Image (cartoon, rainbow, N blue to C red; front, side, top):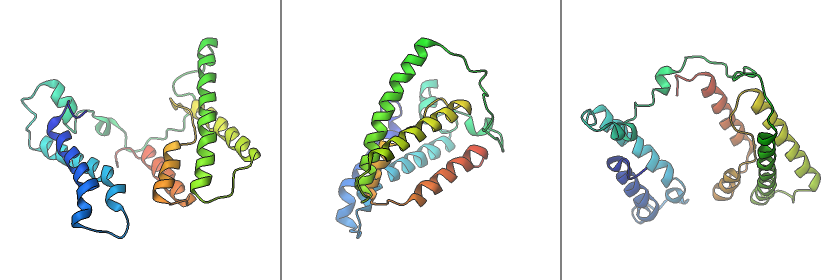
Length: 199
């Protein structure tokens, strides 16, 4: 994406490298905040730069590809969304159908998700300083992943559910092993899925 919008991507890359590699020389925080949040700060600064460039009408006479890549107001998702939407309507994309080939492909994807979830369970237990995970807990976790994938299909999600390996990595990086973090982030996701115009 850097090549598609250089005027936004290049400053974001420079900010990312500066924060992660050089800011510790000027500011020495007690924790390694600069390394942990460099990507977050660079994404926020890229959006700010893109918003400033969009508001300054610099893209008005540019080609359509540049407008689609660089402007912050091209998708129209916020304008077209309703103020309040309840996404909990079963089978909103139509009646379920069955195709043997597609079911076989999804079975293979489910096995991959099962293996990935098993590794994520062990990693989360290790990095969260918990006791080693017994086999019956792995089976119970895999069962709940299956139940969640079923309800995802019923409620119209285009993806299944799996344990997030990225979250296990973040657990190792941040050393925050509280369930409260997951509960609060889930609350944010549910809130913003219902009230789409607020975000």
